[in-house]
Image (cartoon, rainbow, N blue to C red):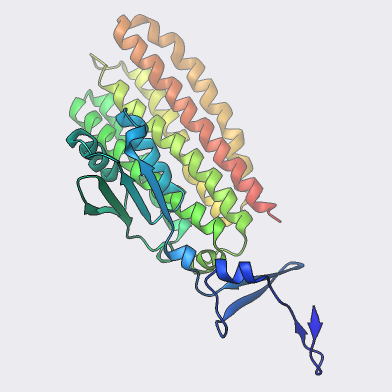
Length: 327
C-alpha cells in the first residue's frame, strides 16, 4: 500500500487478476467496506456474463445421467452449455436434451447442429427477489399437499393426478431457486441487485430451498399414494389426517415467515408443534390395520409422508433461527 502527497492510500492489484476480470486502464471498480474487510470488485465482469460449460454427450449412454449433468450445469450458473460429440448426435440423444431443457426455466436451444447443441440461459438473476420466489415455491407445494389430501377424502383420482403433475412441475422452480442462490453467493453485484447484504444470508436461503424442496417432494408423493386408495375413508381417520395436514401446512407457512422476518419466537413455536403431529401419527397408525392390504399400505405411506413434511418444516424453522443469529 502506498500514499499520495495528500495522504490518500493507493492499492495495486496483480496484473493477472485485472486480466482475469477483463479490466483495463480507466475502468471503474467498486470499493466496499465489509465489516473489517475492504472488498474490490469489477463493475463489469466478462466472466459473469459469459459463463459456459461443455458436455461430451458420448460419455452419457443413459438419459437420466445426461439430464442430471445438464441440470447441474444450469444450477451452477452457466449461461451457455455446449453439448458436443465427435460424431453425429443421435435422434435419441437430441430428444433427451430437449426433455432436459423442458425441466429448466429460462433455457432454450439456441443452436442445433449435427454434432453440437448450444443451450442458452435467458434469465437475468438481478431481476429476481429470492424471498418472493421462496414464498411462491412454498405456496405451490402447500397447494399440492392440500389438494392431495382433499383428493384422499373425496376419493378423487383425477384431482390426485393433477396435484401430482403440478408437484412434478414445481421441480422447475426449485432448480431456478438453487441457480439464483448459487449465483448470488458467488457474485456481490447480484446480491446487491437482490438487496441481500451478506453472503451468509444466501447460504441460509440455500439450505431453506433444500428444506422446501423436500416438502414439495413429500407433497407430490402423497398425491401419488392417494391414487392407490380404493375406498372412502371413515370419518375418524379422515379427521385425524386432515388435522395433521392443517398443522403441517401452518408450520410450513410460519417457518417461512420466521425465516424472512427473523422471528425467533415464531421459529420456536413451530419446533414445539411437531409434538402434535407425532401424536396424531400415533393415533392414525392403529386405525389403518382394518383396511384392505393395498389401501392400508397407501395410508401408512401417506401419514408417514405428512409427518416427514412437518419434519422439514421444523428444519426450515431451524434455518430461521440461524438467520436470527446471522453474523
